[in-house]
Image (cartoon, rainbow, N blue to C red; front, side, top):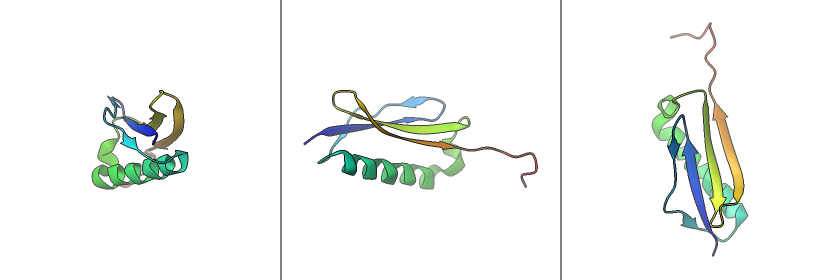
Length: 80
């Protein structure tokens, strides 16, 4: 079963050193979306240390699979 790693970048790198065995690419995509959702739900805006947050998914050979990218933009008329 292929192994996938889910690296987080939010102003600093948080490499996944354990990875997870999944049947294939479709399951890796689902896992990436689910994991990103859990991180964002738990940490919210605090997970951003700058305006870009992304998750890079790679297989055991180091090949990029999907990436998830999120950004936050503060507007000047934002309500505090």
